[in-house]
Image 1 (cartoon, rainbow, N blue to C red):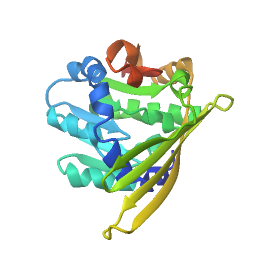
Image 2: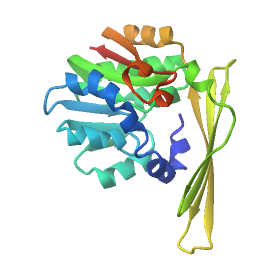
Image 3: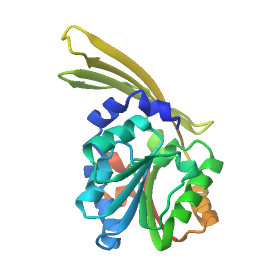
Image 4: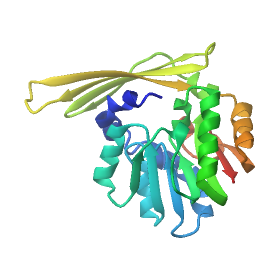
Length: 246
């Protein structure tokens, strides 16, 4: 994913999706990550965005470092979470001191990595940042999730903004595009600003993800369908959680 994709819509991203992912994903994260991390553990939040999950990590007492390629999203996170250590970094070339006890990447962020070579680079970077036995948990969407996209617009209306979004998936190239159009009310009630962005994602086969983890050196790899862990079936359809140890 290009950093500019979310830089263009950082405010919308933070406002609209601040409370959508974490409540649905919490049962899976509780089982696979939180229950396995010791108190005061050092945790790396990979693709932290504007800090929705970072906030929960801090709430649980972890010492948190977050990285994201979007300077705009990291700036929002810094404003709300000054106690976290936050960096603007391309996760394909992580440069962190570490070592960390655990790493987490949420909200299918790694689907924004657009080539298998780059996914290998991310996994290797996370592996190198973890200490011995460090835990890595992340979720990704597989093809059945993207196949649900019916090219229909979803509209979210608030008192000062209107957001339209739709997903487009190409089964031949295994790429998905989320088209976003955002109207934001300015200081004058009669003036609205329009922004538009397209966010690209890549759909990977499960065996490619597992092989990339193994190639990076991870062991004890587990795969869990979100449908089996999370009551919200709409959230879970086509989403998988992976866990692995260094």
